[in-house]
Length: 116
Length: 140
Image 1: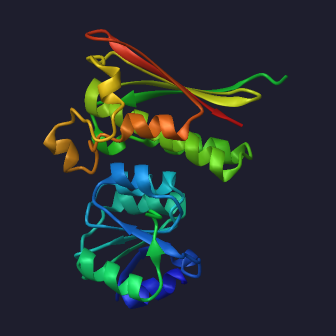
Image 2 (image 1 turned 90 degrees about the vertical axis):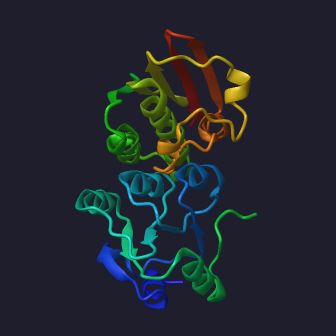
């Protein structure tokens, strides 16, 4: 699935990474615990989260995840977006709740990143 | 035999939002040196977990990364409270982090096990009341 399709499906507002919207992803994970993302995620895909701090961006960067979706209309700081740009990560935000956003993406073919 | 490439960082324990800056920097340097994605990822995740631990538990410390011919070594040293029981600390899910740290997305008790998982060698040298030095290696 193209990252731009994720934006469309979640009616998300793009916050940075316009150049990388045609990148492909085939899986996603959703967590507010970055510890768990670092421990259990096996492939590089989309991170959905309601947590807003710089560690979300750094966690995605460490895991080579190309896209972050902030759910529940959470607003990342300017500092976070600058960091995401530097790391080449697409950042968007959606008014969907985490459960809804996951359901929409899953029903359109995005698998779980944890491989459980 | 090449001269080892070395990086040194001071990890600021005052500011949680800056935790991980050194790991991001190391990943960039390893990319510039042409290391494969898997090696970069393992080094940077292990170091990132260690950096976060130093900020959460030890008020910061230092991080030294050395690129040798056959492995990349990460040494994280702090003057924090030390780890009273390493076996317990290595158990997945065991954490002494406070609730305010969990609210920031960390403190799930996965840090040390994750550092071991992503590296080929890990040694913890710790003394209660003195500090902790963790040495990790990722084979190239």
